[in-house]
Length: 128
Ligand SMILES: NC(=O)c1ccc[n+]([C@@H]2O[C@H](COP(=O)([O-])OP(=O)(O)OC[C@H]3O[C@@H](n4cnc5c(N)ncnc54)[C@H](O)[C@@H]3O)[C@@H](O)[C@H]2O)c1
Image 1 (cartoon, rainbow, N blue to C red):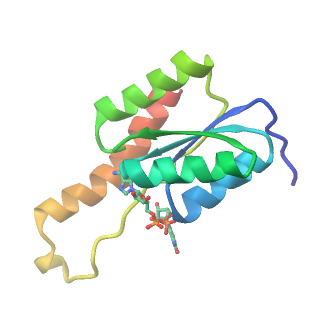
Image 2: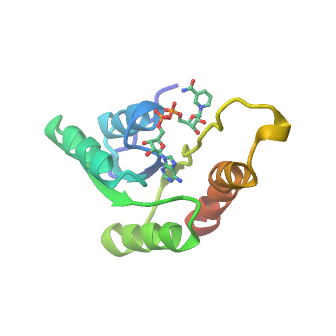
């Protein structure tokens, strides 16, 4: 399937590297302006610069998807700058180190669920 994103505004969480960056580049290749939201601010800026240097359009916004204020701020910035959001890839996710259930700390459990589950919900809440 070929989808054309000319003049569309697309958000990619976790877009600074890995599958998120590859998806951001794909959006840009198909004409979208891409917002790279990642909690690694420096890496997100490097990713946006790389896309811009390749002839695409991208900006970076620092965002920890597990923090409601960060997610709200990201969407507010997008709406203020571009007036709308057309597509989103809520890709941010982490994996806990493999361990026995009894050895997993509550902090690590909360961190993983707050990014992988609450983070996706927060993004959808403010995107929608
Ligand atoms: N790579 C795989 O084989 C694979 C397999 C299945 C699922 N996934 C899922 O796909 C997604 C991307 O995986 P990947 O391997 O490309 O990731 P990656 O490890 O290459 O990149 C992770 C990125 O997530 C960012 N990040 C981490 N916590 C964040 C947070 N709270 N808020 C915003 N950004 C945050 C990091 O800064 C980094 O840029 C993840 O959700 C992962 O769980 C990956």
